[in-house]
Amino acid sequence: MNIARIIRHLLTGQLAIRRRFPATVLTAIEQAIQQSETNHGGQICFVVEAALDTIPLLRDQTARERAIEVFSQLRVWDTEYNNGVLIYLLLADRDVEIIADRGIHVKVAAEEWETICRAMESAFRQRQFETGTIAGIHAISRHLQAFFPPDSKNRRNEVADKPVILQ
Image (cartoon, rainbow, N blue to C red; front, side, top):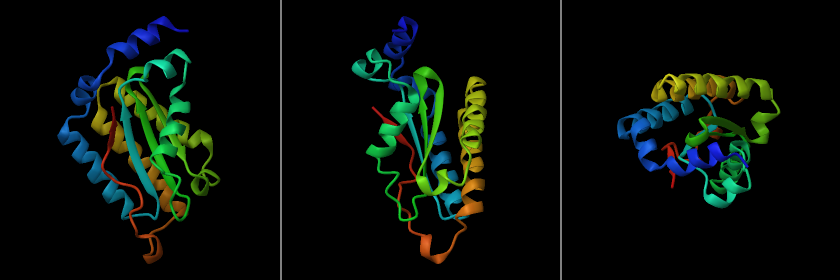
């Protein structure tokens, strides 16, 4: 049990999200996802969570484990071509995780996703939340373009483009 982590989670709330992701930034992220999805047949979902609830926190749930839960809860895996990608930010841990569905996961090495996560985290450390998120969306889009080019069959928007703020 990491006491510093517990305190950080207890002190990080919705106000922290609103400061880093005001409405204008959330709109820019939504527009970046919409624009991105015109260039490929994949689906991108961006989620921010301030902190873990008490029980998962006491069980030492990792950001990765939580991201997998969110991926399932939001049904990002439920796309026709199995090409949904979740970008999950756990603000209290300053940790970004990317969870890619099996259709794209088998085509892109885990190291590639990890590189995108670390670049986003680096931008966030510099308080560049909008820039870091949009750069991450563009990096993911390049992979989706390579393996899921746009065509008339995969134009349906299966995952909401609007960023999700978990309470």
